[in-house]
Image (tube, rainbow, N blue to C red; front, side, top):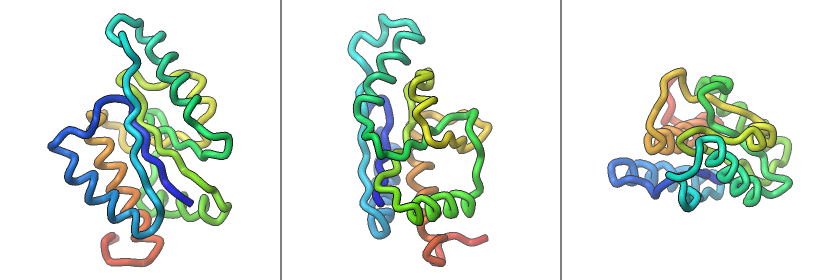
Length: 157
């Protein structure tokens, strides 16, 4: 199994880049992992919110493979504890899932087509975070879940 972290927007800002790289490297001790930063469509400022989400959605669904297991990060998703995420990841591994794609949508969220394609919708919190911080939190929590599954010391319950 491998992880892909997708985020619509700009490259990692310097204030989170180091942390993202640290946790991504740690995750790679368990599973292959990569980041894909998907560019905002050209002329995004000229598009309506609905048209922007549609264009981003077409790009996202165009990149997804049929067998990809899509986890959409969305404030209206289901919340998981760190242990719950560990169980979730272990279940996907037990099912021989090839790739889990964790998707952080654009500034206005994602299109209905992407929501329908998602295998799971996950909320990190009822709070709203800047997308850059969501990247860091995602990487840290996936690393934490992997360490829980290996019964390592990083996570202290």
